[in-house]
Image (tube, rainbow, N blue to C red; front, side, top):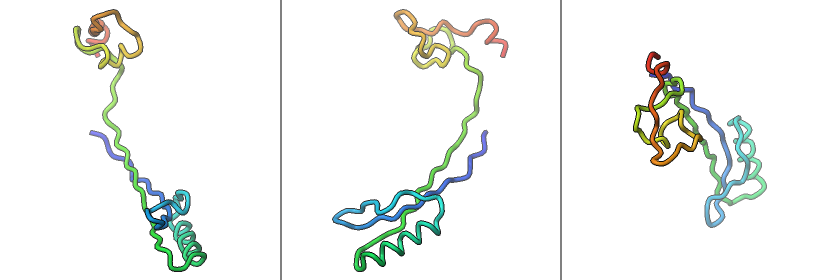
Length: 102
């Protein structure tokens, strides 16, 4: 089982103009985004604004060597057959004896 990476955050300011629309680009620094929110509020009093935090979390699955699936499997699902364009009926030939020992 793999450990997840720490979540990454970015911040942006949105303005309500019939629908919520971005009023700034995304920023990794929350203090900078809050300063943009304040500056926009001062330039456009009475307009609804909000600060958005977007969070991205990545998980790494267990990795293994690229090998063939069992013989007769669908070649489109096989990582070792990917991009080789095997002949019809598109079946994976199966692992070689060397791959079986891994």
